[in-house]
Image 1 (spheres, rainbow, N blue to C red):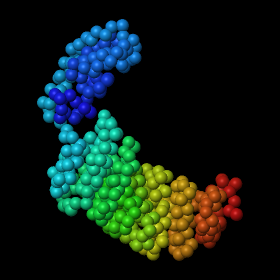
Image 2 (image 1 turned 135 degrees about the vertical axis):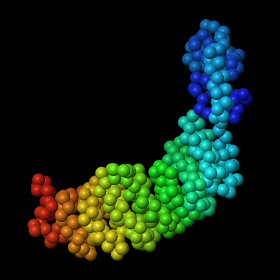
Image 3 (image 1 turned 180 degrees about the horizontal axis):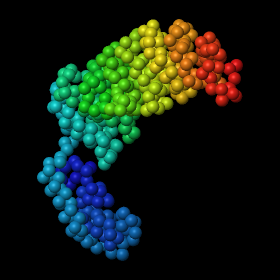
Image 4 (image 1 turned 60 degrees about the vertical axis):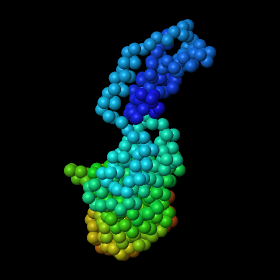
Length: 429
């Protein structure tokens, strides 16, 4: 927002009625027309001198062009300016904040205030999106703030404080609708410039962040980092990152309920790791750090929606592809297998087929007794498998489903154990 000379340096929220409808600046000498609309004297005089005979705001004809000083409004503006100056509610310009971040070699208390001011500027609805995109792009704010995550930092609170503030800025850029795609790509490129260091910093925020919101923001940026091509390999090797993602998924409140935002952000990132080209080497690490138990718990949680479940099931599918993962699934079969069956037909086609793949791996291919017993005892399991066969699934999923139906026959006293007899319209074959 442009301010007149006497108000320069004040970058605070300006009451809308202090602005001239023509110039949008704070009015220096407010005057009213006969229509009742108030303008800054210089602006309305230029309008009238140009030969216009209507009110700029209402477009009504002006029977009189007399300008009446609005002394009340002028007094209010003067008080507002004095109050703002006396309380030193001043913001540095965004360009100066970016320069401060770029020139500082430190991390923590010296960077955090400037980064918080920059975040407040970007989050201000009164600032035009064009200006925000300009400072992010031409002003190189996106790359500069991303570089903070690549700096070496300490594990104390001060060391995390600056990184957390940088994460707040970058997460806002990535999530904001008004930010150009080019500026969002600048964030991704800045993180990918040193993926290992960025992953380590994001893990620090997830471990030592001051709020759950900061931890969720860090997970969102980690997912962006994993999608940045060649940077994925370096990021996936960060044990700290995977461990903190698992911990984030399991975050519970005082009543033991999982947070839906934390579950969604953590599972999104874990699913990206599980689906990466390096998934074979990542599987063991995911399992060792507790991803199987975390994903199973998320499936069982009443706060997890279908989108979160669709991300948890591919994590379990990836785990079932290695010996360690199958062992973990079977060790927690009483919890994991019913959770997978319970979410079948509720997680979209990909999620449903991932659920079948998990059950097929532990119950049919490797015939683990604990998993088979848990599947046979799960309520509605046979019904869901039959529904899946009729849902237009892929040929591979259909074949796996048929294999699982045979397991039900073997493990149940009758082929209808666990089958909802009220759904008589569904036939096995």
